Length: 245
Ligand SMILES: [Zn+2]
Image (cartoon, rainbow, N blue to C red):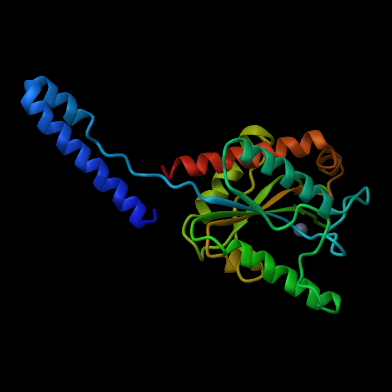
């Protein structure tokens, strides 16, 4: 909760309204009316919706990992992000994205792939930290040497309060909506997950599934499943936000 002057102002306004209605009730309505007013006088906490910042991992020359069918992660991440953005906008959220095309977002004039990657990550982090009241999600796909591994898993850092609960909420949504057999636990990470660790807002890295698993890769490559994944992330986010109201 951020106590801005606007918030304080709203509270004072609400209090003034309750007092004035109570006084009016004493004059015009008697005891029953006073009780009614008192029941209605619980001042609700004002709720300020956060900006939702979405990041589609990789992009441009950086394809991320590849599926068993040779499909790069970057496009799957982007498609899921675009579906998720559409859903969030439909519900009235203010949504910002690090990219909505197949590109790296490094500064102009930067030479060399390593320098471009570093600039690209700095710019993604800058967007994560641009707002005082935001929630940040970075969409990725997983990969492992053993093709048997499958299932979504959320990664978070404990640098910012809220990230763990957000990760758990999205993890639970995957179990509820898509993967009832998924018993993965949310995973705490350190500096190696740059965006999660250095973000100043609640942040989760959403690993939607394993591109090294043939069945899951085949699903993740379809638009229908990408939509389902987007809805699942949306649902988990909604559950988390409901706990803040
Ligand atoms: Zn990735």
